[in-house]
Length: 105
Image (cartoon, rainbow, N blue to C red):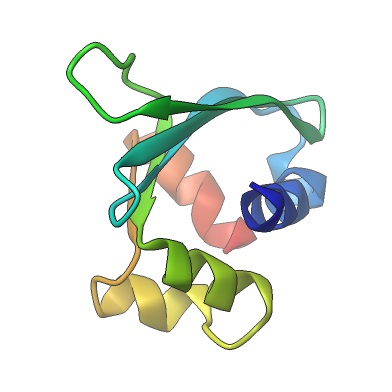
């Protein structure tokens, strides 16, 4: 949870994220859990963990990765761009959000 707060906190603090109010999810494939939260007012709020399943609401911005990749992103051993390009990290969002997020990542 701390690693995810670090990555999302950096994303939320970026000036390009100003004015965004979006729901977030990060599915950790090896733990079969999803962390849900909200990006708004320059911060990530209400992070909580739920088991992965069909009853989960679909977030506006969705990340999928293994927990080891999350830790590697947090401590700088893995860069987001190459991780995304190789399929280790998946990012799903609407077109407008993707265009805005490319400035952040």
